[in-house]
Length: 620
Image (tube, rainbow, N blue to C red; front, side):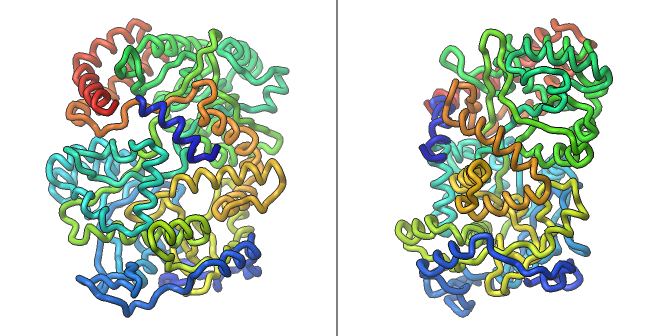
C-alpha cells in the first residue's frame, strides 16, 4: 500500500468522524571551501533530463497582461513593473542568515524581486508565535494588517467575518496548474477535509500548508545506555514505567525520569496509557472534548504521583520547552515525549556532549489493561496563509507559490509527467543536477549542535538554473518560503520512506532528491539522527499510519473556530493549563479537576460542544 493510500486510510477514521545580495553573505564562488561539488545522483538526473522536454527558464518578452508577463505557453514569468507584498514573520533564535542578511534582505528575496518582480516587505518580525499572534490581533484592531498573513485558525474566522480577508475561491480557479495539483493531492490525503478549518460562510479564506504527515508526529525517546546500566528493558506498560522510574530515581535522585514544561508538553508519555487527550473524539454518536473526560482525571492522578515522588522537575511550571530541554542536553533525563525532529534538538547536542550516550525512539506506553491511544491534530491545520482585503495583487500569492513549487520539485519525474498529461502543462524549470554544498564541513565544525544546518550552505548552481530549492546562498526549504510555504504531501511522505529504506538496506539509489539531501545532511550533523529515525521513529509511524492496533486517531473536529471558540477559547485554554499544572504539583487536589469540568462547561465549553457537534452532524 502506498503512503498516499495509507494516509487516506487513517484520515478516513477521523472523517467518518547566484544572485547574491550586495553586502549580504557570500556567493558560492566566494566560499572558503572551494571543493568540487558533485551530484549525488548524476546518472539518474542525466537520464531524466534526456527524457524530459524541458529547457531553460523562459524569456521575459512574452505577453503582458495587466502588468503580468506570461510566456508563449501561458506560464507566469514575472510582474513588470515589480510589485510589493507586505507580510510578517517569526524569526527564532535558531534561524540563521548569512552576514548582513535578514528575513527581508537576502539572496532569496533579491532573486524574487529580480526574476519574478515580487518584493516582500515585513510589517513586523516576531521572536515567537505567541507574540506574532498578538501583533496580528493588534494590526487587525487598528485596520493595519499586512497583505499576506499567517493567522491561527480562530483568527481566520474572526478576520473573515469582519470582512478583512479575501475569499480565495475565484482566485483558485485561475491558479497555476501545480497549485491545483498540490490542492488535489492534499484533498485526497485528507479525505476532503483539507479546507474545512478555513471555510467561513461557505467560502475558502486561507490556504492550508501541506507538509509530510510526520509533521504532527511525537514519540517517546529513552536513554538506552541508562536502561542497560539499570538492567531494565524498554517500558511497554504504565507498570513498567513505575518500576523503571523508581529504579532511575534511586540511582539518580536529581535526575528527571520524564520531562514536562510549562505548557505541559511531554505529558503524552503518560496520557496514552489512559486514552486521555485534549482533542475532540467520538463518543455516543457525538464529539466530546478530551480534557474534561474521566480518562484525563486518571492521567492527572498518575502525573501528580510522579511529581510527588520527584520524577518530574519541581520547577517545570516556569520553564518553556527550550529551558526544559537543557536537562536533556546535559544528560539529566531518562525519557521524554517529543516531536520526531527532537533528533536534531535536543538530542544532537546531547550526543555531542555525551559521546557514550545512546537513545532509542520507542512506542507509546500502554495501560496495564491494554489501553493505548493518541489523538493528533491534522497536519493541514498547523499553518495557513491568508490574503487581506488591503492587498492590491491577491493573485500574486498563487503565482509565487506555483513558481516555488515548480522549481523545488523540478526533478520529480512522475510529477512532471502528471502535469504534462493531466494538466497540459510543461515545467518551465529544467531537470537540474543536484549539487553538494561547498561548505558542509565548515558549517558542521562551526555549528556542531545544530540539526540540519542548511541555512548557511553555499552552492554553485549556474545563474540560469537558480530558483526555489536551487539557490546558491539561501536555504529555500518550505518553512522559509514567504507567502504559502508547503510540501506536496504525498511526495513529502515518500521522501522519508526512501531515507529509512536507504539506511536499512545500504542502497542509496532508493533516495529521492529531498530524501537524499536530508540523509546526507543529517549524517553530517550526527549519524545518530538517521539511525534513530530509521530504526525507531519511521517504522512506528508507518505501522500506526496503516491503522494497526487502532492506536492513532485524528482530532474529530476539523472545522473553523466556532463563534464561541473565537470569544472564549483563550480563557478556557488558560484555565485548563493552570488547573492541570496545579493538580500535578499538588497545590490543588484531584477534585479540582471536577470543578474545572464544571467551570469549563459554564464559561463557554457547553456552547462550544454544541457548535462542534452541529458541524460534526452536518459533515457526517
